Image (cartoon, rainbow, N blue to C red; front, side, top):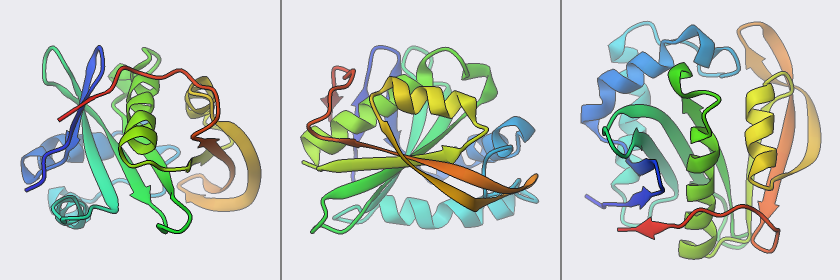
Length: 189
């Protein structure tokens, strides 16, 4: 199995594995994290296992194109969230990122720190040109995170997200390898 670990001052990102099932199920089951998520709350742990099994398989490929990382607190090893990083066509040299953190870690800079890590990984290790993300227009926390790392709002897609509350508009963000941003000090293993 491929090992990829990314470190920042407070965080460790590593590829998810089957032993993360309970922590991922707990994260997906939080009403607060479900509010702006199209996944919905899984009915039971078997449903969560069905969701993460293809992600774990994708992480085990020789040439990974869809990464799913566990976000852990570096000092304690506590699982605090997930971050997905899906590569686009090699011709376009791009990717899309998404993240979900446990509510106990909101508003403390962890999402910004994790996103900076993955931007470093994408631009410096994978030599990408463009990394995109999106969020519901009501998701003020994610908007702040995306803008804090230097992403530019490029678009507004109408009624594209099927949320529990109904159809939501989506802001589309991206950052280029040449854009100014706050970077983390990447150490990759």
